Image 1 (cartoon, rainbow, N blue to C red):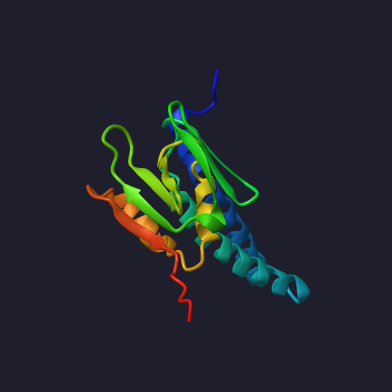
Image 2: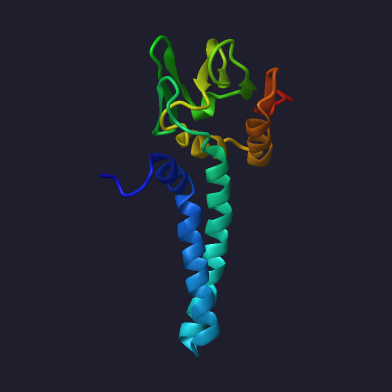
Amino acid sequence: MPFMRPESRALLWRWREVLLALALALWGLWLGLTALGLVAWFGWGMLVIGAALLWAGVQRARFRIGAGGVGMVQVDEREVIYFGPLEGGSVSIEAITSVHLSPAQTGAHRWLLAQPGRAALAIPINADQNEQLFDAFEALPGFEMQNALAQLHILPDHPVLIWQRGLRALH
């Protein structure tokens, strides 16, 4: 007999990094306020680290839309791989030229990862292990995660350019 409802467990799992960072920050605050000397400074350091981890955890939690969609995402050695039931593919992070958020004809919205000379890799936003895309997107130079998160929660009805690699001039 499970101790928690599946919905509650999923909610806690989605926000797990935020909860751990909050616990670290509160512990650091408690040490900073109640301890003396070196331990107090250690507590203030824990508070700062906890606050930074809290901010990063909120970003990651906002990116996790959920699972249960078609296919599975894997990021391995700077390669984004999508295993879908009917389609799939891979793209190197260095080869990505643009990232779009596009509505699907049926099902969930999709991330479109464009690459030169090949069709764009379409990954549903609710594919299993989709949170691995967070780190892949952060590796792209100049990627604005706040813009991506805002568009992800709006779910636009037309394709939206999230990021595009800067063009290099030959001279």
